[in-house]
Amino acid sequence: MNEQVQRTDRLVSVTTDEGQPPESGLDLTYLESTIGYAIRRAQMAVFQDIYRTFAELNVTTVQFSVLAVVADNPGANQADLASALGVERPRMVPIIDSLEKRGLAKRVASVKDRRHRQIFLTDQGRVLLEELKRRFAEHQQRMLQRLGTDHAQTMLGQLWLLAKPNS
Amino acid sequence: MNEQVQRTDRLVSVTTDEGQPPESGLDLTYLESTIGYAIRRAQMAVFQDIYRTFAELNVTTVQFSVLAVVADNPGANQADLASALGVERPRMVPIIDSLEKRGLAKRVASVKDRRHRQIFLTDQGRVLLEELKRRFAEHQQRMLQRLGTDHAQTMLGQLWLLAKPNS
DNA sequence: TATTGTTATACTCTATAACTATA
DNA sequence: TATAGTTATAGAGTATAACAATA
Image (cartoon, rainbow over all chains, first blue to last red; front, side, top):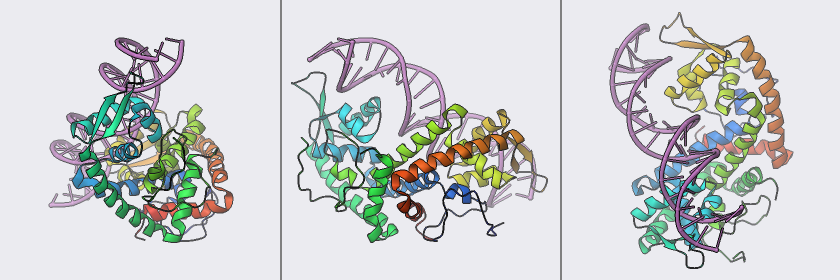
């Protein structure tokens, strides 16, 4: 069942053995050779680590992202945040709602353009963000260790090449 | 608003400029330096390309994965497929249902263990899979071109290092 | 007692359309 | 007319629990 068979339909040739596919009784050689399956499994693993990292603080990845971006861009509006984070505008509403309800962020009606609601962190939000960033840095270190610190930098560049090919 | 400011809180130092983050009026330097955000944006881009690739054939990524794995593992049961693909067992039910309804795959009650339903491709399923694989190969070529063909192989290994650190 | 397939449930996410208030 | 925030809705995906059949 696990015998090595010469495959001719792999999308790339795999010659190194750094990086193992998931354990399973099934022959997954085809899927394992695809960027799409590999990146999905990698994201699942990375996000699982983040969720464990933030579990006690009851913060999701997207909530963390909003806090971090607003900290560097105080007064950003919801549409800009949505496009920055790659979520649809309607989804920002419950996300900001939850942060506001917890006293971590606040909406302020813009005086320059009264259609805009500007988002700011509260003092409490800033305090929590510092703790989240501290923990996130530990998470990131774990990810870099998986990659080997010398390869980590190129990995980030390659991910952005996939995400943003025309630039 | 877009002036370059020296940041001290980046999780990794970014010295190269291969690979651009998404356009936005906001300062995203912190998020852009995280593996988590980069891998999420990369997966979004990769899957978007796959969906465009399969659009006319009305096939989702998970349906394609099931067809591909069953082709190499005829008679696999739903639990094995679920764990191989990283989805929960209950989700396999509607996935297999849809493939069965389209006449692409079929469930066969196992005689060795009557709890198992073994999954097989139909002739029609095999024919469609060949077309899907042909199109998928083109998609993968586009992804490899984004990476530069020399880096593509290491990328795959690195993704598996993230996905499966202990192996 | 444990496992497979299944059903059920609830919650999150995604994708759209449309409404309101503003511009 | 166009845009920001919002509401509504429908469809996927995710996560659990539980049940029937079987081991």
